[in-house]
Image: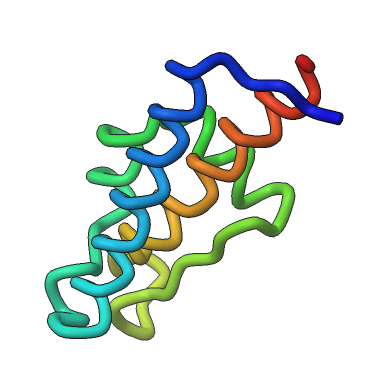
Length: 94
């Protein structure tokens, strides 16, 4: 059985509401959900994003056919992985 402190439960609820809002915004405005790899690194940390890519948790799409074209990611997908990692950490620490 997992027992959470009240503040942990409050933060989890807030995180899940944020994730729900991000997915809703993705559904309404798909173009606004897309961010560049540089922006993903800035918002979520380069090492973390590269680790998620290595583990197959996220994947980007190229903006063009050139090897130098931008790699784009869904902000909602990145947020989902971030919140999942946080939840996994809380569950494993209990």
